[in-house]
Image (cartoon, rainbow, N blue to C red; front, side):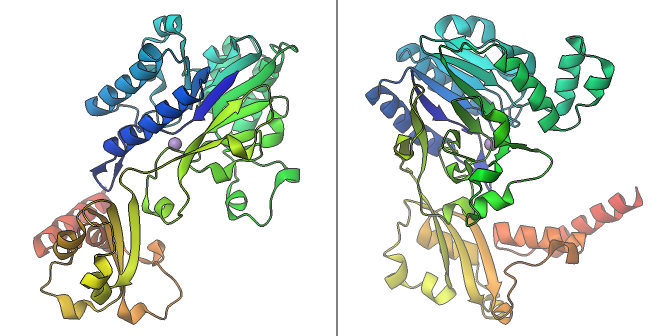
Length: 391
Ligand SMILES: [Mn+2]
């Protein structure tokens, strides 16, 4: 079967208070179009469908419309799971009757041991869960107490879960797992030259070797496809850029079109073009306000994250920096300064542990609003910390 693999929609997410809904809708239109063009047999959404456990009504309306267009208007089956951002018990509302329209959504571990059977493929939908969920599940199932206590890490839990899944395998079919975890590459696949893989690790991380028996593992959780542990165990990444760090890379976001009867390939990727892009500028004040410079920028069209480099604040005490930049560029979602006196220091940012609590709030406020806290605001912050410390 041919599946469209996407994940981490995070519907309702904001960027420094700016709603990303329009951008999410724009990406959705491209997902829909390609699903139609490619005549896929289903849409996989591998968790973090919403951005939060209790989404806004706007987010709910938007997602409802998207799923309606896919599943009712265009008859695409949907195969979805909850991620760590979703409220598992809320998201599974309507699950039992949605299934009648080929809309499958698993949000609880106990729902994951009934694969969806198609002509050539068994699809296992395993939502995000934690070791405690696994303990509860296996205790109920009658596993002995000592073995239940042995479930300490997510790796322990996953071994049990996967063993139970492997028992359900129909050898005549391909096996696809949809899940939502941090998975690191197995030793043989580690590319020592890649920065991404070396950063993935730790207690919460699973190892790719655990999933060896699956033909394809469609992952959510990490927002970039470049963190994929191997060719057949892949993150699709999120459909849009969620923060400035991501915007610094020029590569587009995307999703995969996978024929489950074949091996995964690089050519499975379909790119998503941003509607309103996020442009990162790192320039001096003089350059930023120079018409020769900004006339070449997509002002009033895209969003901007601006760092003013070599900035001498003493020369601009009476200027409302943010207002002036917004006049020129339109939407400035993030504003930062690099002071001229720090020019030669290596560290780009200060070590937060070196700052006291008040300064952290102070600098955060400044980086977001472009203004310093007023005397009155400062005294409110001070009071709060005094109160907190006395508790
Ligand atoms: Mn996510």
